[in-house]
Amino acid sequence: MKATGVVRRIDDLGRIVIPIEIRRTMRIRDGDPLEIFVDKDGEVILKKYSAIIDLGSFAEEMTDSVHEASGHVALITDRDSVVAVTGARRKDFVDKRIGDSVLRAMNDRQTIAEDGTMGAVAAVLDENWGEPEFTSTVITPIVVHGDPYGAVVVGSVDENEPIGDTETKMARSAAGFLSRFLAE
Image (cartoon, rainbow, N blue to C red; front, side, top):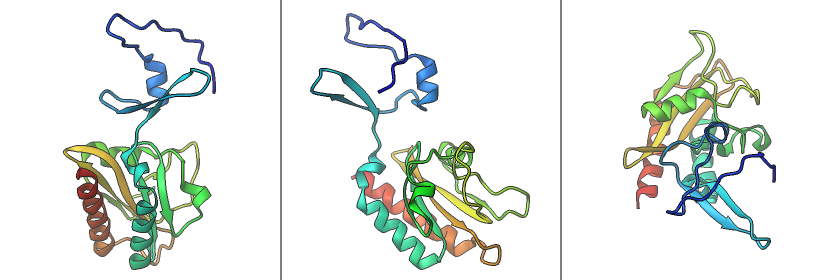
């Protein structure tokens, strides 16, 4: 665990304020759920809660299905990082922070499709990580009760096999299915 040097007091209602610098760094937004853990040494640990991560092997099965049907790289993200990938090396994507394009698709609650003809393709990962180059992508948010929980991303690494309407519909179907599953 890394010390921040910040000390805060608990108020009379049992609340503690997480400093804005830490919230920005950790991408914690107003209303984000946090899990509370207590370890054996009495330390209290706050961790961002992700319903998508709780899907576990189900998310992997979904990326397997999308990849098998499309032949392209399939990813599922939560609001911060890639949770599951099929069609690319796991270590290149899983647990890496998502990029601005994925955040924009989630925040706007809109599908983003880019084919690379207008320049750079949507940054799936945070630019600090670098990433395998996609020649085209489609990013569809997973929205549950109006709140974005994550995204389904389908990316092509072959410029001769761009992402088309079929892959876009596939990504939307996968995101819709996950949305309904999480809403239950």
